[in-house]
Length: 551
Image 1: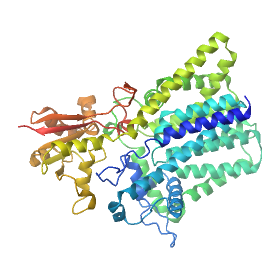
Image 2: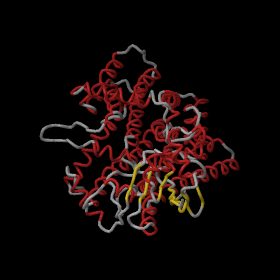
Image 3: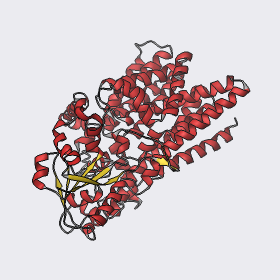
Image 4: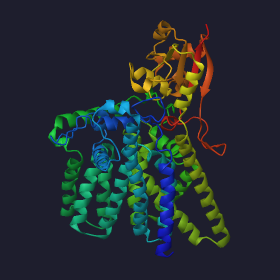
């Protein structure tokens, strides 16, 4: 394939990826009359709140929220620079006063969109980077193009490119480290070891749980035939903390606070009791099994997962140096996320998704080259079908994100069907609720955005049945955040203290279900994901139930 043809195709792939990642970018933001400062993806607001107290003149860059500090700080710092640059060009109003956003919600929307645009940028930048890596690995434009295409349509990468999170930036950094590792295998320059150390440290500061990435340059060093005791490796290890401090300067400025954040992260991620997890309902399924079966099914779709599996098996058979390097990372990180935390998180797969794309593309092209003409046609047809189904799966979620959110649809129904002044109870005021509930509960008084919204008395029961009966509300609203575990796990519900309230509302006869709001991922009337979905996908469009007091 000629170079200019490959670059044209790559440009078209990036264009497709751009459409998938930009469409629906305003999802979760206060774009309707129901104001809510927190996005429907809650981690986003935590990143923006972390900038409170920033003072450039006094060189105060301390991040103010533990939610950010316990994960990693480089991505929030990078985003702060991103937002500041946008404000210099008058693209966003980065105000230190929250009141200014309440008075002009569109400014808050622009702030979120600016933050999200950084995820889009690094998500898209990873695609040509993967092309370069794959072409250097295998010297074949066709493999490189197919790998880039698979990443461009991969559902988990598409969806998380819409959010202000560390994961897409982290994935880009992992790919950069692989590019340097290739140079370590082919180049003995000390500069590569120095650069690798800096980048690994910076990546560790982006997200502490990516720590196993430090093994990759060592593996590349050994694969190149070098001895393990080598001064170049010493240079590599010496520059890891330098890179980490650049990305997390307060680790040495305020080590006590940094250590406290690490301890809190340990408590949340290592010692959390999975039986108390209210988010997902996989029951006794181990994380080793979850990240091998359930997570790929939901994060990639079954057809693409099968391609990934074929690529991994083929790499195990070939066992070339590059194969060993890639497989080492996939196996190490799979075991790490499976064994070190009880959480079941789809996005934790992202740091090895581009490598799975490389292996599957390499497998597909190799099979096509070696197959007979008749078989070759069937393989190309299979690739086409898998590509279409994967693209369909990604697009079905983007369609939901582009449309009016189910929380706003429910809010409009409430205003149109529930008389003003009625008492409405919810177990918890959180981002799964109809937006009108959050608006009326979080903000009171004469806020400008409250004008024109019907007023209701909103009560939070804290999952307490006695409190519910004390309030004696006219209506109760549940989301699948509360009731889905109840329906799915029944006697194994993760929070048994909540069961009496759910039983009172859903099965006690005192309340009657009068309205259900639900939107499944679909395209052209065809549903792409049926049955139970993990909470990370359900949050895009949670089911909402409205119950009316009848007894």
